[in-house]
Length: 151
Image 1 (cartoon, rainbow, N blue to C red):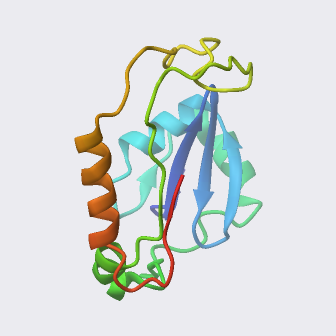
Image 2 (cartoon, rainbow, N blue to C red):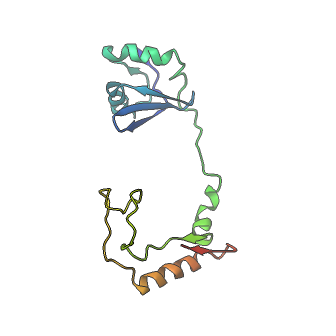
Image 3 (tube, rainbow, N blue to C red):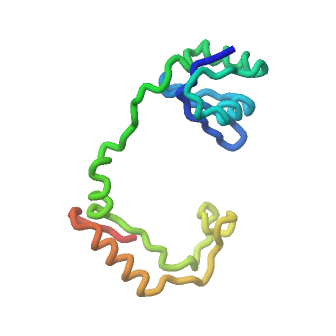
């Protein structure tokens, strides 16, 4: 069995595997084997020979009109893409400074509470020089905004 090279994006979330079919705009759950097959053949632009063990799964997907077209040439572009550099350099509106890692609260939901493996509280504090540099950076990159905030 052969199919035209699909215009898809592969997605792995934890132990589940999905494909997003660009033309049908569908996300479907697929087997690990099919995920691995498409991953190893993602640069092929011609017809793809489907291994016999995956044919039933591919036939199931074809019933939903997946793989119906090849790359349409459409690109998704950020609406402000042409102004992005100007926005980054002049439109900064808010900055959050973590001035200490020594919060006196130990909220269970907080990512810094010690209940998670990423970080725990410590006696580290931000220096005045670092805080001043951060505020100077905010000021230098907010010339086109009417108000700024620091949290």
